[in-house]
Image (cartoon, rainbow over all chains, first blue to last red; front, side, top):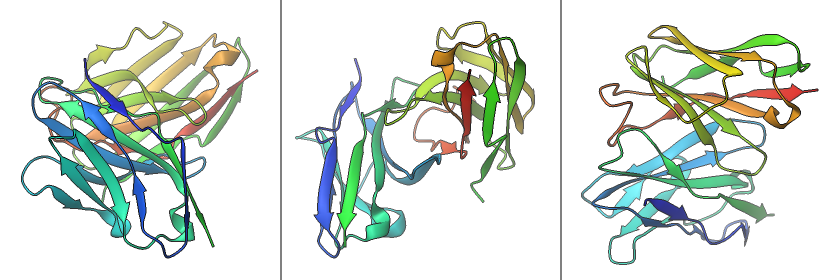
Length: 114
Length: 118
C-alpha cells in the first residue's frame, strides 16, 4: 500500500534561518512526489514535484526538495525562511501504478517567528 | 495561467436544503476532482471526472451528487446534508484525463468553498 509520512506536526524556525519539512514515502515502483502549501482558508498551492532525474528539485517561492531513494524521503527545504512562509505544508505521492489518486501526508504546520 | 475558480466562497445551509457548488477551469485540463477537507487535515478525494465522465467515486454518500456539464465546469450538488459534512470543499484539475489525471500530472486546486451545515 502507498503511504506518506510527515513525522512533525509543527516546525518552528526563526526568520532568516534555513528550514526543513520532512516527508517519507512508501510506494511500489518509482514514485511521483509533490509538495503543496496551504494558507489559512485557502486551497492548496503547488510548490514542486519530483518525476525523475536530478534529485534536487527547485520550486516556487525559493523552495526546493531533495529526493533520496535509499531513504525514501523527499524533504522540503528553503535556505532562508520568511515569516510569510508560515503555513500548512502537505507532501503527496502517486505511484506509477496509481493512475489518479494522490496520497497526502498528514501535513506539517510551519511557523516562522520574526 | 493555473487558475481554478470556485463559487461560492462560503455556504451555510440547513439539513433540508438543496445547494450546489461550482468549479471552473480554463486550462484545457481533462481531469477534474472534488475533495473534502476538514480543519488541519489533508484533503480526502471524493470524485474524479475524466473526459467529462465519472471515473472514480470514493464511496461518497448519495447526498453528494457530482456533475460535469462540459470540460471546463464541475458541479457538486448537495442535498440533505448532515452537520458532519461541514468542511472545506476543494476542486482540482489536471492535464491528463486518459487515466483520471495520473502519472506526473500536477493537480491544481481552487480556493475552496467553506460549507457549514446547520
